[in-house]
Structures are given as structure tokens and as C-alpha cells.
Amino acid sequence: MSLSEKQIKEFETRLLAEKKEIEEGIEKMRADLDFGDDTDHLDEEADETEEMTKFIGVKKPLEEKMAAIDVALERIKNGTYDKCESCGKEIELEVLEAAPESGLCKSCKIK
Ligand SMILES: [Zn+2]
Image (cartoon, rainbow, N blue to C red; front, top):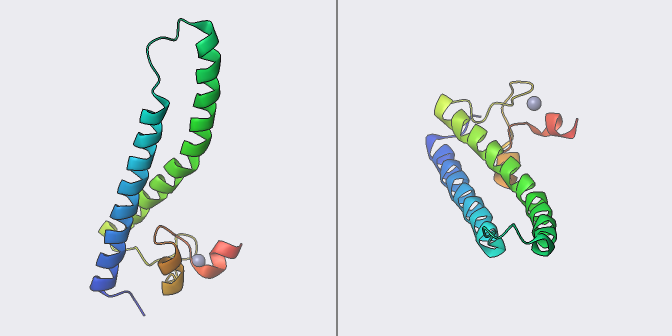
């Protein structure tokens, strides 16, 4: 059974909302860190490097998720949203419910 247009629309809305949330989260983190132009001060630079490393560590999985969301949105556009990227079968609804950005069906996900 394929997804109805309404279901796909709902997933698209969820994906867009999630993407926006992640973007805002990254933006907020960046603002909190407030990297100034005062990198001339060596003692502060050490601190900033540490903060930066932390920031990148937190940011990376978020960016990866955002990339996955972009791929999912692209698949919605192409009409292949509920097709597994690996085996081409339909992705189970429960998988998409749990992770709308998922591109794999249940059995391929386990592999
Ligand atoms: Zn599959």
C-alpha cells in the first residue's frame, strides 16, 4: 500500500518543521558562542578553540540530519518518498512515522 497524497503532505510538513528547528538550533548555538574578532588575544583563543570544537561536535549530527531531511524532501518531490533507497520496496509507515527522513525500509535499516 502506497502512501496517500495527504500522508505524504503531512510528512513533508513535519520534515520542513524539523529542518527549521535544527537550523534555528544551530544558529542559536553559534550566537551563544559569539566568536568575536578578538582572536589576537592568545589566551582567549585557546578558549574559543575548545568551544569551537564542542560546537562542531554538536553541529555535525544536526547537519547530517538536515542533509537527510533534504534528501527526503527531494524524494517527496520526485514521488519516490516511500521507496526504499536500498531495495526499492515500500518503506513501512511505522518507519516513516518514527523517522520521516528515513530512506530505508525496516529490513535494510537493520543491515
Ligand atoms: Zn529496503
